[in-house]
Length: 319
Length: 252
Ligand SMILES: Nc1ncnc2c1ncn2[C@@H]1O[C@H](COP(=O)(O)OP(=O)(O)OP(=O)(O)O)[C@@H](O)[C@H]1O
Ligand SMILES: [Mg+2]
Image 1 (cartoon, rainbow over the protein chains, first blue to last red):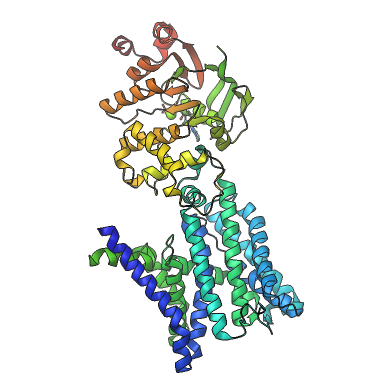
Image 2: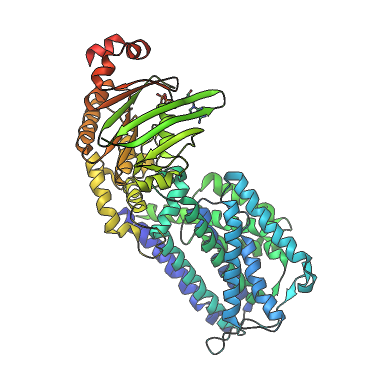
């Protein structure tokens, strides 16, 4: 009984969220208010990135402080080809995912040999290397960044130069990514990842080569975030190294923890809270990052399950 | 009989402490070989070197004729060596069934399977339930492991090792912290398992040791001071002096 009510509150919230997301462009079209559309576009892209981080951080216990690297890599894989006049969408997406995957494979192979604080530091260090790498390449704008003139071209399939089309493209991407991550976490592979977070030594002892499984998980998360980066490049029409400085990685962690680690919709809640708070607080005060910090401490101290945990709690109480 | 496990001059040092010192030991197939000795004798260290959780400083381990001295623990598990931990080591965030099902999964092909729901997979669930029934944990299958009692943790330790269908089972004080009734039940389980399995049993419960063991090895300060049948060990003067109190011997 208890389980059933929890389930329905979750399902209700999920349905409401996606209904709102689905009909939002109609509302903004009627009221001629593009601002909300932009806000939600950004929210959804960040939700994909946060969901991919949640896969390694929440499910796998791999606290990466460098996940924004993939946002940057993905975005540059749209921006650099576009700079040379190559706007082929599938090619750009492929580049974004492949480059992210390769970066994750190489850095992950090294990072995953370390544990705890060392892992956090080394993931951050690799991302800083990419950050400074792009800062130093003058050809692509250095730290001023680069304007992307044309969005990815998907031919007759969909034209994302149109903002409404781009919106639905991102929404469908979010749904597919969440579904993929959901499937992965429930699969044999997902259980190995969860077991390795819980007790890696024992997992090895019963016969799993945990290092390899964790590395593959790290690569999958990188690929998904790279895809989010490609969307981000298209959405902002502008790329700069700032997308992947360490603060950006920190913000992704903020979203995952605020939303609730290890839960499917947590990253969506987290990204929503982040985007809304950022928009609202930054209009109130210059020191909005300070309030973020305070909020994060509150969540860690008093609401370990984050927003998703609060939803579960309310669902239980209602019945 | 050919030994399933051949250990030659195995050594392990921790800083200044010699935990195992030139251990030479053969374990025959199908026997229950008890290793006894006072606290700190190096029994757990020996098990960890056999399971691959600790690297040997020196020496060689042959399992079914293969040199496994430098093989990582996960590969040894796939060859058929399983261990239980003296200090319980479980996936505490997952359910009892998950813990055992993972042990089954590790031995049913690779786990690069991303799509099907593993918790609905009868190829994993059925063998796991069978083992849980065997150790008497079936009724607790959906409980998060963290919430089990100490005795149940010990049972789960054994269930996970059994679920890998090992040829060689390394049991590090499996009865520690268990009640009398549970201990008897375990003794019965191990007796039943004897067909087709070899076991190394570390145990302080002399009742269990003498009712199960075919061979007994006595370790003191990292060295083997005697190996033989229970009868021989009982009669051994060195063992009497070093380890077994006289009264204990009489009660057995
Ligand atoms: N990881 C370690 N680091 C340092 N010293 C260790 C370590 N593990 C064991 N030792 C030391 O090695 C010696 C042997 O320890 P071990 O745990 O193998 O003994 P044991 O026979 O299993 O004892 P018990 O009956 O108490 O379980 C002890 O002196 C112990 O303090
Ligand atoms: Mg011990």
